Amino acid sequence: MAKGNLQIDLLGASFAIQADEKPEYLEAIYSHYKKTVSRIESSAKLTDPLKIAILAGILAADEYYKEKMKHTDEDSDIDLSEAEKLALRMISRIDQVI
Picture 1 (cartoon, rainbow, N blue to C red):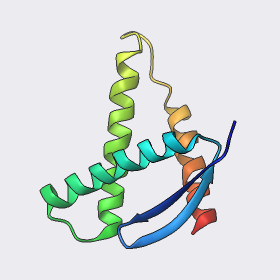
Picture 2: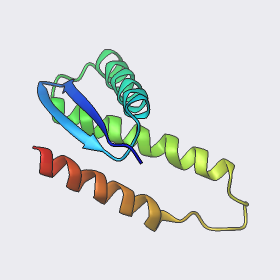
Picture 3: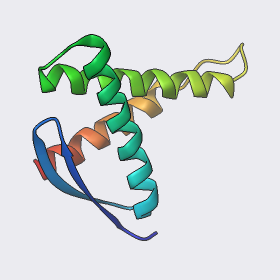
Picture 4: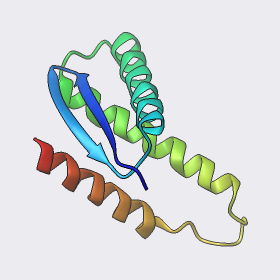
């Protein structure tokens, strides 16, 4: 898979990342995240970048789980370990960049 580069300029932080995803996909994810951050800033009246980023992450996780639940039988359990692994990998990548 092709590596994509993405420049992040948000919440007072600026850095570039490289991922094994197409640039268009990375831009779409980043755009969605920026809209979520903007929505939080205007509705919650928060100014602390860390709190805003945490809330945006929680909203993203909420969206993920709701979508996953739509595609899961009511009797089966949601695989939380998969989401945890993905979150840990993303955190690790961010730590490497920062």
